[in-house]
Length: 99
Figure 1 (cartoon, helix red, strand yellow):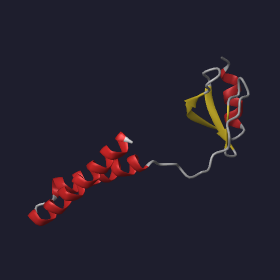
Figure 2 (cartoon, helix red, strand yellow; figure 1 turned 135 degrees about the vertical axis):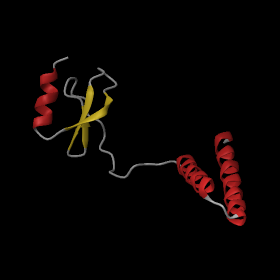
Figure 3 (cartoon, helix red, strand yellow; figure 1 turned 45 degrees about the horizontal axis):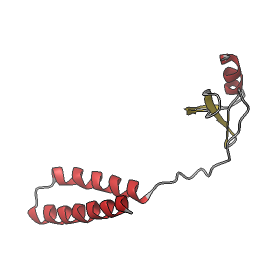
């Protein structure tokens, strides 16, 4: 694999990604919202700049946040409310995994 091709693409403004080409295994690059491989010249579809996130990921992040709040909380009423919220989040995550 010639590194020269990657360097040339970087010099032209491309960004090196942490992903690899499914065809040849070379590192993928991105320029003008287009992901491509400089070796096999495979191009991927243009993707929206918005990152897609699943409901399960949102629930997991929320649960992680609530656990951090719970760790610092001293008020028993607030602790109880946080625990109820966590219980509902965990139930919902379990239902998602079963579906």
